[in-house]
Image (cartoon, rainbow, N blue to C red; front, side, top):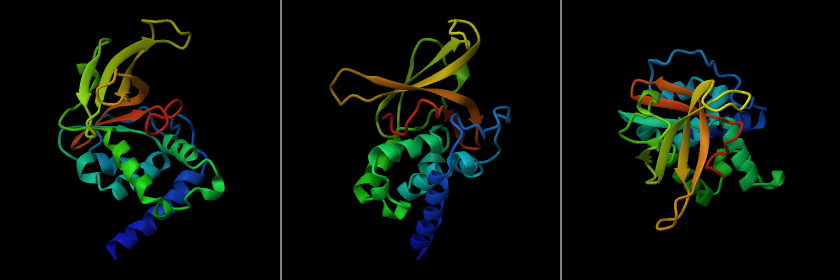
Length: 211
């Protein structure tokens, strides 16, 4: 009965979360918000439904909430806009696109679960102060190699001028093959929840799953 209630809730979230138009870059995010959130990672994400309601619904259905809320972890948060574009790629025909989370085929939900695991860095807090222009490496909960570095530039394209940004990259190659990284910029960094760190990813250039 409890599972049926969850499906009902996320069905509403899917409809509202994926049908509206989102601001690219999560324009609804307050970029000046305090870095100390005072709540768990999941509670923070749930408190920002305009940016993360689709994400939190998928985390709940995938059973990954305890991992996202594990102590000392880092969660790299893709925004709803990135996930919507993923569904557009997987289901290009709007007539065949699932109307609710409950309509998503199980094999696709299994893929989504594996994708979500690669946005979680367990037992490691990735923060700006610990990064440099050279690469630092970590292993995701999905057992993929991730790397992080700082890049500096301004709006005119001048290198070594302007703000410094964290770049999150994921090795997308098969085991034993040459490493091939796909990257995304972090646009809101070092948000400290009661259990770890949240880094919000750029929705302009990133599609969920690094597609």
